[in-house]
Amino acid sequence: MKQQFTLAALGLTVAAFMFSSCQKEISTTATESTLSEQKVSKEQKSNTFYGPQVSFGAGKVRSFATISHTGVPQEVGVQITADAFSGLSSEPGEYSFMIPLHQKAQEVTPFDHLEVDWNPNGHPPPGIYDLPHFDFHFYKITEEEQMAIPVYNPQTAALFDAPPPAGYLPSGYIPGPGGVPQMGKHWLDVTSPEFHGVTFTKTFVYGTYNGAVTFYEPMVTRAYIESTTSSTAAIRQPQYFAPTNTYYPTQYNVYTDSKTGDHYVSLSGFVWR
Image (tube, rainbow, N blue to C red):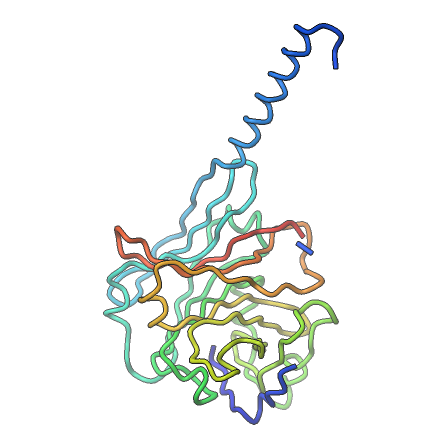
């Protein structure tokens, strides 16, 4: 998140959904049972599709999407190799990595592509998000549309500041000040622990531009990723969604493969909207 937040600017006012014969009865029951088992088996079976690897520190990062044989996404996210973190820059700034998303994931979710941003010194507001952390952006717009988002200034402010219609963001989210080129406006969950005296480890951010929700963003500290075996948290849900007729996540996850040491940050619990 490239936002230049301040505590004052945030104004921290802490503000899905019988047949006649016995022989035929036995035969019908067995057939129904078999069909039911086949359906369950098909729903449980899945394939995982991977995007191309991208250089990331001393290692690699790539997207993945696990989709059931019935076409329901089970998990979409990024896989970071165990050696990656050792090669990340410690110099101040933000380091962005565009992560292509497999076509199969694009077909069953609203997401087009991903972007991972490394913030070695965090970012404002001080005392909240100024810890080394990653921003995992799941974009609902194309990369071309993302790159066209301009710098925030008096001439473009209205595009950044226009909120989505009521119900398209969960309650308790407030807009950060200004906006970020090639990103948009970040909306923060002021019910998250870091706004109540607890050290920041992870949170979930929504992004908007020109009155539409444009990205989902788990934001997670490096320390939390490195120290967490497995963690799942609920994504607070809005009332309305756009586009519709696709699957949206209700959870985000952080976990590490005990055999390979690879780290994963993902979305799951997909629901048809």
